[in-house]
Length: 469
Image (cartoon, rainbow, N blue to C red; front, side, top):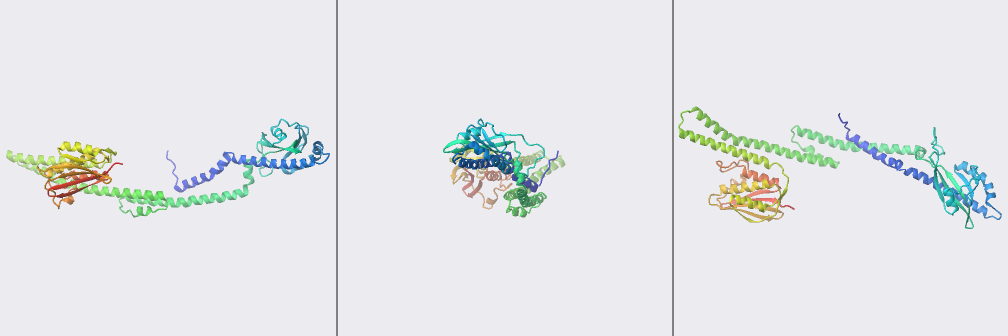
């Protein structure tokens, strides 16, 4: 099954719309709007209740005024108030009996209702009761309300610091759907403006982002096709989209590394072909002579066979050296390496002495051991039979240094710049010219380098490596 893929603009638009809708979902889903609408209705009922309580208290302050007679006189006003505010009003005495009501339910006892009980004790009582939800066609644009609850608020009537009764107000609050519908025209315009702005931002950011990505993809395709031009990648490093710039920089760096590797492979292949050509030609000539001259003397045949054996040994050494180079280019897991212990072990194997000490480094113990092996082997073979070879360890700044020193004849000045080149050797009979190339490759792979200084009587190969933290 193929997954449907969307463009960056589509993803941005969808994400913007989702983010835009989250506040509305939170307002409705969390019940915050519903709670606020109920609180508004409760506050409105409380305010109206206080006005009725103040009016009744003022009337009862007159000489001869009593609450039952006042209730009879106020009942038409209660009904008129309900018609205008849609809030039901009930007037109860100190026992909780209804003396007057906007709905005509006089005589009912409300003393057990929690809001009435709280008001008769001198506080403000409020409660909510379930009511049947209105079914069928509902006109959300009108003043009628359709929430499944009804709010009740009771306010005490106080005369001379004595609670003589209470005013009970009640009404159904608006629900969130009705609130949205009644805010419709103005809210709809605002929503359209916000949606249009969101769409414009998504398209604008998608344009800049997708344009840079398209240019990056085009540059990558050209590179994959063999182009060496990195101008487009370097230009994209300054993209306004930071991630695109970082990706372009990474692709440019990868392209540089790949190009360097291709150049290395071309050069390496040429060197291998050149180095293998001579022994292969020698072997071919030897076997042709042996085949064409069956009457060749035994002494001459043995000399030719010895030459062939020497060339085979050289080929074997070349293959081993190339394999070591290939392994050195592989990245191995870095582990703390105790250079002092490694140097003692390697020097003991070659019969040379070690001086000094240095800090540990991070890297491959196997590869670093091959560095010391090649340096010591190179010194013992080229310095002369009577030369003394020493391994010296030291700390240089933030690096650990390994020096392999010999007091031999030294390296010719003309050969010094080439000693680390692959296949360069001054002893083609015993060497392949790959040992010192391997040393430089491993040293640089560990973040360090190797240098050589040579004068007659003293040659020093110095490997510096970053010390472990």
